[in-house]
Image 1 (cartoon, rainbow over the protein chains, first blue to last red):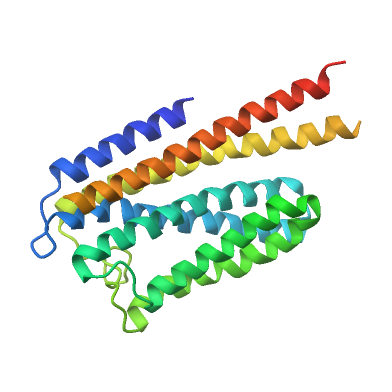
Image 2 (cartoon, helix red, strand yellow):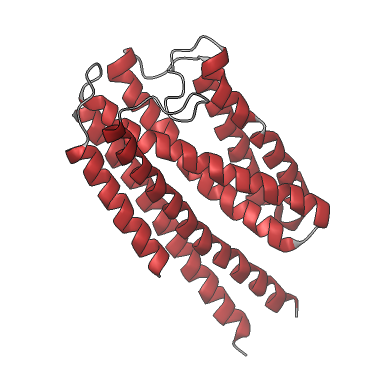
Length: 215
Length: 39
């Protein structure tokens, strides 16, 4: 019970800091405040899909159900965070770029990742125990899209700006903004852990249910 | 400020919907388990 409460408190603190304390950005004005939920959602989804990738590889290798449970639980939460990214991105893009959406490399590869994991969740929902191996392969393919998304804005000409935080030269943000962004990243990662714990508990419960039914 | 509000509210709603789904699923699983265990 402590983890969800801590996550909720940290998210509330992060949102307060983002909306009330963070300074206004000189070029974008108020819309830049979307950064404080957009970037943490990206990071949380990357972490969730990385966990899914590792658990899927371990599942295909060891064939142990516990790895499959982690992969499924983390993929579902990752998809929620990725949906947040695809919601906040266009809302931020409209006032800053003048358009909700553009088919540039960054946005398109992110949308492809969303469709891959939508497919993953459909396989999980509709093919039961038979679909676990297929789903693991889809998760591994989906994960390979993440480096493409991250590097697309550096290597290709895109409307989306280059990464301002996770770059080899170090973060390119004033410390007053960076600190608040870090609080929000910690909040979103804690929220991911809290949701993962609940979701894993449900998968264990589902397994128990199947065992009881089989008896 | 309208765009900022739209972004924060949409993220909040999405999260609330997911938490609601998790709670509903939890209740359903607990109910099914009780049903299976009952003689």
